[in-house]
Length: 577
Image (cartoon, rainbow, N blue to C red; front, side, top):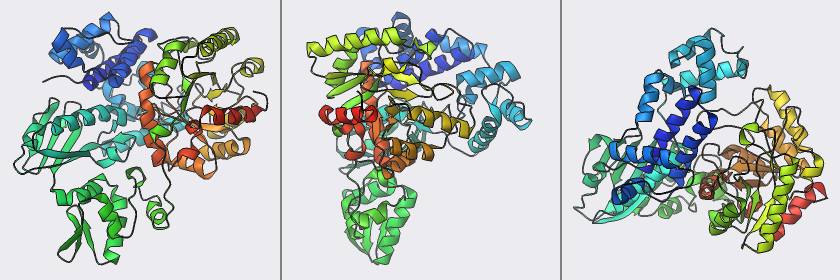
């Protein structure tokens, strides 16, 4: 069976995690993680390339050593480097990384300080109160660890959206290639753009006798056939992801798509509206008595209960039925609305490409402008910029803009918010920029009131523009720090500054509910890629999905504005720029 890019990336991610736990060089750790990110965003199928050329093609950030390892995984399905790490570290330690809030750094600290080697070791350490005294943990972290362990005991594994998306795309293409298949649609939480997915639901239609079920069970990454039948089959992939395929008749397609898209709570409300009209609504159609009156399309299902079609991202029982009935459904933001990106890194800090290359990649992605926002000096691990290097970068941006690259490059910085709420660079340096993206990168363990006050003080700085990834979470290994986001949003409304929805799939921060809160307070949100390479602009699609779940329309999104409309908004914050 051919090996997918996702499987190679997953191996590289695991190697990076285990190397960090083992205390390896941070640059070596980062190389594996960067390679995994590149593989996920690449349009090149590694297995096909190796089969055709005998070697992995050149990709940015993947040198000779990692390319050889990728080829090894393609040819054998295994990686000797990962096997060696498994031999050095307890097998149970990998399970710790699956708990929310426990990344490799924390697992290493728990392992080194308390001898934690398994989830059970961790449970005992937390229950006996031995964790809260460790630097960077505290009482709240200890309580969250216990809650996460308890939740894990009764929960199925969930997968980040970016890990499922390539699989969903490949599977859909694989099924469409079967003669007789007429339609293929991914349903479930994936279609609703949930940030994590428990399993994958796929619907197909086809002519009688088409052998789509047989083709499905022969997909290259199938590890186990759980169930196989003429109209429904279930498989488990190598990654552990379960996939259900249903073959439905054309006349039931819309009803089945609505039913299997969910959410369950939303479907219950729609069925209840149907019952009030004497209708029966299920996955087979809309019926009055025994007569089918709808179900071939989703629109026909909603029309039967007096509603317009409701976008999948809104189907969560959060007021969408009442809004639809009152004609108040928002026109949700679309990827084509995005005019620029206001959070991008280059190789001056922890990115992998030059300013010119990032600008050209942004232009090729269809953007009108891009802001270069490398890290500030406090983030030493990223070789952050001091005042002198930032000024030199500004001069380079001026030269590139003078060349006329077909895209405007804005001067920015991702400046650290220090523990006391001060910003990491002097006012004089920040005042020369077009925008200042400020972020918390340290002291995540501060108490709620202290953390909130720290961020509010930073927002009062005259050069503050956007609060980056406001809760600091990383899926699935770092929980959000404890902060009163309601207070932050209210303060942003008073101050007139902006919040970021970081589109990196491991962040998707703001969450959908906080996006909606920002909208309700009139706070505009910047949907940014946080790209570290030219391929990184592709993640904007994940940010759009999250924004749509948060009911955001074009007018709610800062960078859905053209540059002529954006510049006055940026200048208005300080009255100087």
